[in-house]
Image 1 (cartoon, rainbow, N blue to C red):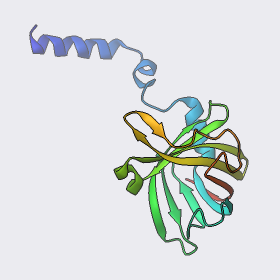
Image 2 (image 1 turned 90 degrees about the vertical axis):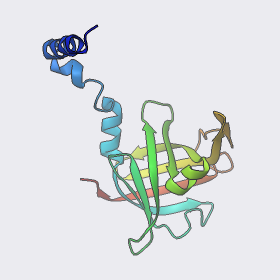
Image 3 (image 1 turned 60 degrees about the vertical axis):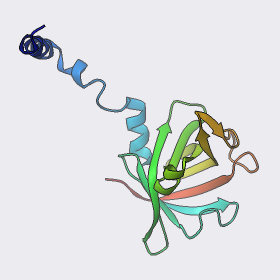
Image 4 (image 1 turned 180 degrees about the vertical axis):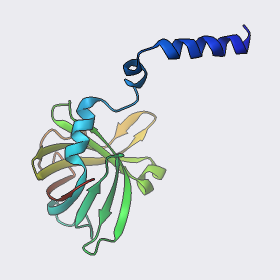
Length: 160
């Protein structure tokens, strides 16, 4: 088939396709979009179990582009990474990995509960080896020992 002909057919197809169909796959699912609106922002770490689990981090900042940063009391970034949300799961899922851990194959599987300006997370640390999770299973509750870490956070500021 002539490449010019194929390109013209593709252009014709795209020009007659409704705009909604073209953009339907581009934005995140509506549920994810809504969850990100609520999740994004700066959160003060009110408590952590076990004590010291967050090292010197006193706040977490979640961005709508699915990146995050852990900050110390002076606002200095200690580490950063990416995260995923699944607000449709029961309980809701929050998985994240720091850039350093990602290089080593590390990951964190977690759950979250968001109630206004209060956020609770529970997670386990592990790694993916040949598509199999090595670590405790994802927690279903917000308590040790099912989780490796449980955090209670309070919103400081919403993300723009």
